[in-house]
Image 1 (cartoon, rainbow, N blue to C red):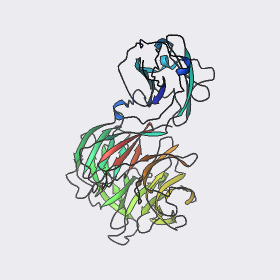
Image 2: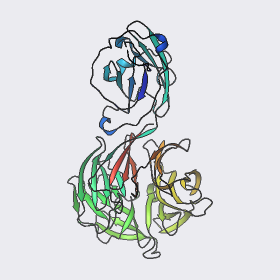
Image 3: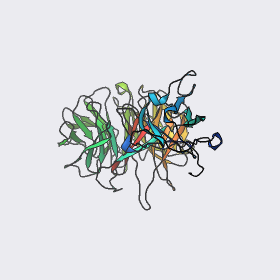
Length: 464
């Protein structure tokens, strides 16, 4: 007979097999041969992600008979009350879930959003009998991770760190994702998580930076001498005349025809007229030519305030675009004083501004009240050099990209309500290889997170 082994082991992961049925032709298992199940939580892999089916994780039950026979008709999986089902739940999940595998070695169930509590505690009851009628019932508690790495979308542009992808956005008009990678625009279908096209820029003399979608405009605006990319035809148009080298870009919320761009080498904020396809003015005086640059921008409704990060000045400048005046200078460095930040993002209602603190004590993320223009909360991420950040559509989650700071770092998923780190994601790399995770955006559904990784695009799963 076979060796003495655990007859049931529960493994959470993604593994598909042929659908079938059968049993093992051996003697019945004695009750004292049965040991409690164990459980392991694994990340999904790209070959089994299915956005349309809302498949977030698979539950795989694998049993091993200790000289016995599993009665497949008597296998039952039930959710327990208080976590993923009512207290009186009697549903056999074998009939409620999609079956991927069912044979003498185990089964695989495709879980959907209604069956498990993502990021929280779960418990299932597993009943298995053998052909002699010996019944074993076990309760298995487990916690799904709040997020997981899904796949890397490889662009084919190579691993070069000197031209790392610097910006990513999803346009609501066409639902496509656009990423700047070196001197190329990478186009991705974020629903099917597949690469559509890589289109080189014939005009740019420098590496492309930030892309901006403007509702109702088929043109994608890209910083570095503001470039224009025609989304319907995937072709480049003539660049904006008179534009300067730039990084940050945002649409005016008082005059939709205007764009504000954070210019490099001068520290000014350029004003772009979309109709004229021309730079028509600037905010802020020239500052330290060749040394000062504006990295990121955010603007309140009606252009009541324009927030800008400047390298030499540090902190965040609060600008009145109508009067071209600086209203305030927000310090983000905590104990280190003014500090500095490269990335800022506004809440949907404009009441809060979030910034990644690159230089400060502590480093991390700060929350700013846009009425008082002062820091009200600091999330210290002492071990990391925070680069960029994005809010989920529900604003219950924030994803923060980081860089190494003396030791390998991790990207971070933040619980915004409780203002704490939910989960970290390692940033693996080979020796002597520099990894750059420079920008991040959420899928409009909130389920996926897209992170630029050198010249490729990483995809993460978000469970809220």
